[in-house]
Image 1 (cartoon, helix red, strand yellow):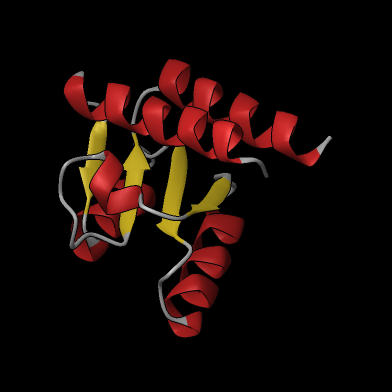
Image 2 (tube, rainbow, N blue to C red):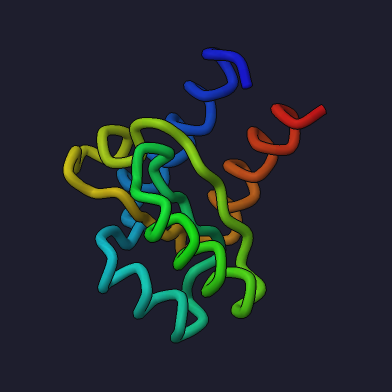
Length: 104
């Protein structure tokens, strides 16, 4: 993943936050995921291995895509947050396109 691609993903998260389509923090994000509101989960790459595994497991069972990126909290304006969920399908699609282009 190039720096430009990372910036695009983080920009998509920032746009979603400005639009009010982000739920952040472990508890709120997990609640959104379990209620079916979450369309995409974003976990900071600097999170602990346990956190990454936990979120990989619960997003997998819920059928929600997950992305890992450095600076998730900073992108949404809450630097201490390691987890955020996008609740809008349009913004989730935008962030997924950034991830898919990175993998090609």
